[in-house]
Amino acid sequence: MLPREELNPISSFFQGWVDKARILHSYYFTARAVMQGTPLHDYSLEELSANRFMRPWSFNLMATAIASFPAMILINWYGPKGLDPAILGTLDERTNFVLQKTIEIAETLSAAIPPVLLTLSAYSASWASLGAKKHESAAFHRGVRAYLYYDGAYGLVAEMFLSIYYVFGALGISPLINLGDEPRTVYLFVNTILFFTLHASALLSCFYLIWVKYDLIGPSLFKMNGWEEPHYPWMRYIALVLFGLVLMHYLLLLILMVLAALAGKAWGYFHFAFLDWFPN
Image (tube, rainbow, N blue to C red; front, side, top):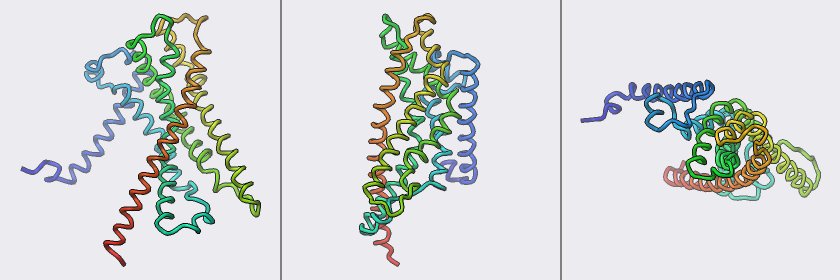
């Protein structure tokens, strides 16, 4: 007997959209509970499922996907693409195609870097908020769960704008600068300075969101671990979160470039294989 989806493809198509709508509704339902003060980080998996709440990682990754989506659309529609034509003119057709696709994929995936950075900061934020006698696994993972819920509920709009800034400001600067007939060394120097400056400002923006904009997260984690207000470990919290942001940021960039290079190479392989199989 054929599966239901094969018997009724139209119904299967609409069912897919219904499932997506249910996931979005589940995200909204969970975010509203977090904003109302429901301590979902203390719920067991069975309690979360029974009350139709999303799990912490699923909830935060859904927020990451939503926050990244507008920047991915904008960078594909309006963002600069590719290398300098003077460089591409020296390459053969296959290398040119692979490099172009690699850059396009890297620019698209870069939209997810700020939200992912803020998600991974759950570990450094939780560790920094632990008390002297609470360096134990249960307290640490409880803090991670709490951070994931707070970040996913309160950071959606801010992360969305940060992703848009990041892809256009930090990764799309080279084609936006026109130095006319200046030597290429000047061109590369100016772009390098702007590249690292904008990346640093993006990191500071992430840190601002964690510390200042999300001032709910730090105090909530501190109270959860038994700290009293005059003695909140803000200096340790700031130092560990900022160090974690810098370290994870460049690690994510490395992973992104490797993934983009592999995807671009695979795309080029299948593209030219198709042309070889079906020549004009």
